[in-house]
Image (cartoon, rainbow, N blue to C red; front, top):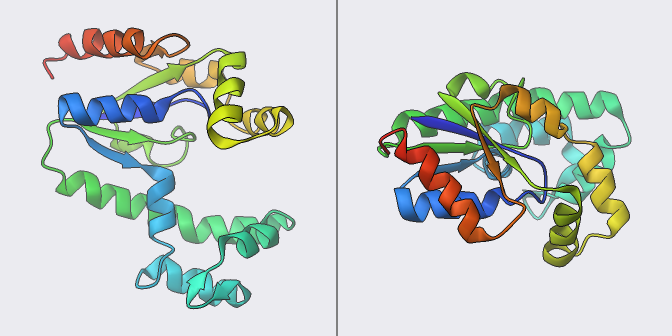
Length: 192
């Protein structure tokens, strides 16, 4: 079974992924990590990014800050980058799912729906967390300012969008134990 785990920044998806991996031997695939990995030397995507943006190479690696400065000030360049990285990410994730031997696979992405990754999922879980708890987590765990938290959160899908596609709902606004209980209940119904 492939679960698509979705939810906004600061909602605690990492905690849930850790629990699923440790307790249920789930194969965890994080889309952001895969996207970063395929931009390392030796990958086809790396070669294509270097060809399109030769100025981002520093000591043989793609300097992500330079790349971000380029693409986030020029929409055409951002689209160009996405046409390189998105298919490469999907291809790599598809292969990871195919090769996984675990009964449970969890694919996590903040932008799972309409990304092309949703077709690999058997069901979708939405991780909800109230607004102020998310902000507090981002300030404490990532050192974000309140303004940056709000900016990042506004640029992601909103809870209503996630909830529209969700087969299961986890409220991660409270204790970790309460979250684990919700996961256990969901999976007990699925024989995992």
